[in-house]
Length: 126
Image (cartoon, rainbow, N blue to C red; front, side):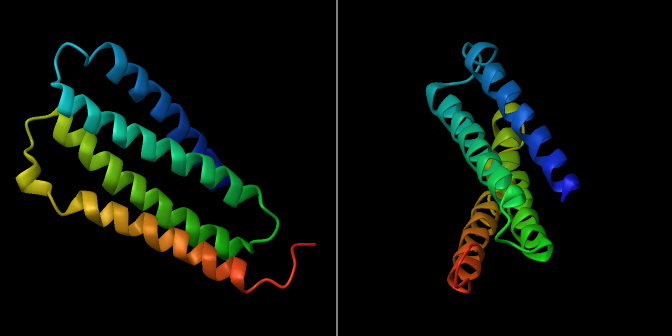
């Protein structure tokens, strides 16, 4: 669990760094549409960092459940946000890695559904 929290904190710091980089350094080099896409990647990364902090400190999940959710969200950030960063910051075209972004979204969705399943199986959280 500590490993998950460390990775989560690193992803949070990276989201802040990339957000500042996008807002300041990329303002002049990216088009408005590209900047909006970059900001979406940062936003989704930060949303899932916040959820990961909750998941990994919530006593209602077992260690195994925390790991499943964490790994799905880590994969989601890597694939969804990571692919958008690559597309916007490099010469890689969206056509060449188009499938990675929705795959990341799928990992996010599965992680959220897994949380629903875990919460639904609980009788109480005391």
